[in-house]
Length: 205
Length: 205
Image (cartoon, rainbow over all chains, first blue to last red; front, top):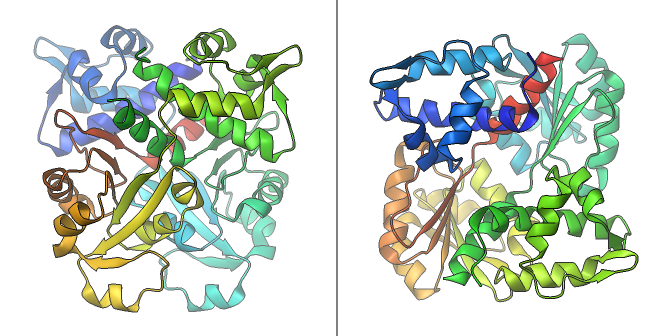
């Protein structure tokens, strides 16, 4: 059963929400509680859950740990995806150590930078390489997701190198658009969208 | 005329998309082109544009510069919102200099860290302060948006201090949930949601 893309997006966000509820000490939740936190309508959430095998529904609501497991399984988040970060400026080096990028399902196995000097000086638990080794290491370490944290003017070229070397997904933090070729999943993150939303909500009040 | 929240969210994202199309050398666009890039259905985009005064519709599609202006105006993104960053680790220090956070509508006017030593050593164009001055400086510099880049265990306390000092919006990058009290807009950013979406799309193929 193929899950529609918007449902996948929402389930990813709900999974994070469930982790946070669990950290806060909860064992059960409800679609209305999830609506309150995620902003997705509760009927949409319930419809999304119809794609799951056994979402942990009980008389006291959804059991969080069962629901988390059901979502992870349906989304195929059960193995480990290997990722690399390209561009080790402030943003890139923060992403190397970002806790969520090194949990059970993801592992950052390499970092790359154009500056050999930076690589030699940097203190990191992740193996670092000069940028010219990008394609070699992607192949060698079977990296399937590339994270781009280089300046805007080189981001598209870096993406192309990653794709040529065989990554299947790209998470782009550079403020340009990386277009996905057939068979590659691309997500472009623009942090300014969040800031604009906040400003708009404030300024309209 | 009050614009619904989901429309505001989409218009913020479309605004970024328009900026990128403009950088790529385009002067005109269409709702189907915007659907292709943003992922929002073209009929939803056209409905969202009905909230705008003069969205720049011409015989050759929407004129990008006019459409950008119409969105900015309708969203109240016309003045300048003043923001601060709390927590100057790798992520926080990258946010201080993030180009999108220092464009026409936003200005980062202060950075804060618990470590006085770090503040003294750091090289930044933004004025830096020790964390205990947070409330004083928010008032003094009329900061209305607080950006949180501290570790998870102190994020909620930092948010509360910001709110007490009078910020009206919070952008939280710490992996915990900051709950918005009445009158304050909060956006929690979890970069792992994007990575999960990519992995799910890859793993299901």
